[in-house]
Length: 210
Image (tube, rainbow, N blue to C red; front, side, top):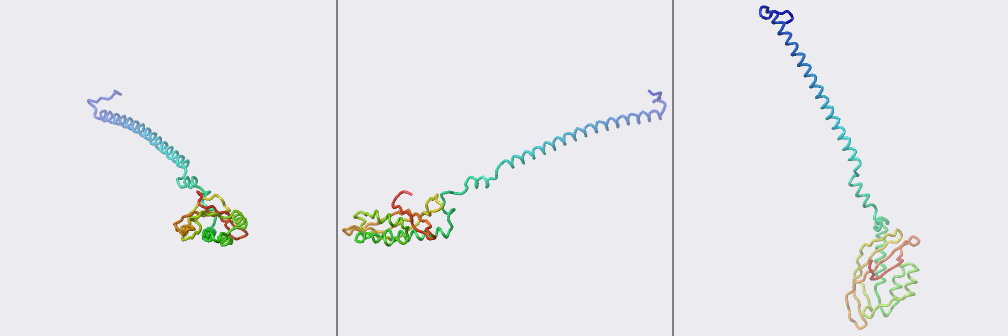
C-alpha cells in the first residue's frame, strides 16, 4: 500500500499509524460537529416553544378580568339604598323628624279628635295637613286612646333621590272606652322631602307592607 514496507521498515509503520490516527480524528471531529448541530437545533426549538407558551399565558391572563373588578362591576351602585343618595347629615335630620312626627301623630284622644293633627302639623307639608284634616281619623273603640311608649327606626328600600323614607315602629298602649288597656304595635312608613330648605313629612302610611 502506497509502496510501504510494513514488515521491514519502521518508518513506514509509523506513517501508517499516523495516517490511521488522522482518519480517526477527522471522523471523530465530523461526528462531534454533527451531534452538536443537532443539539443546538433541539435547544432552539425548546426555547422557541417556551417563548410561545409564555406569550400565550400572558394573552390568557390579560383576557381574564380581575376578580375584584368583576365583583365591583357586578355589584355596582344600589339604586334602592338611600345611603348612596343622601348625606349622613340629611339621613340623621330626616330620621329625627320622622320620630318627632310619629310621636305627635300617634298619640290620640277620642275626646279631642283634632289634637293629634295640630300637634303633628309643624312637621308635615301643608298639602299633607290639608289632606289629613279633610279625611279625618277614625279609630276603633278599642283604640279610643293611644299612648306611645317607644319608637324604633328600621331602614327601607327607597329608589327616590328626592324623598327620604323611614319605617318607624311604635310600641305603646291602647285604652278602650270602657277602660280596657292593651299593648299595641304600629308601623309608620314616613316620606320626608326638602321643602324650601326645610325637611317636611309629605306622606305617611300606617300598618301597610313596605
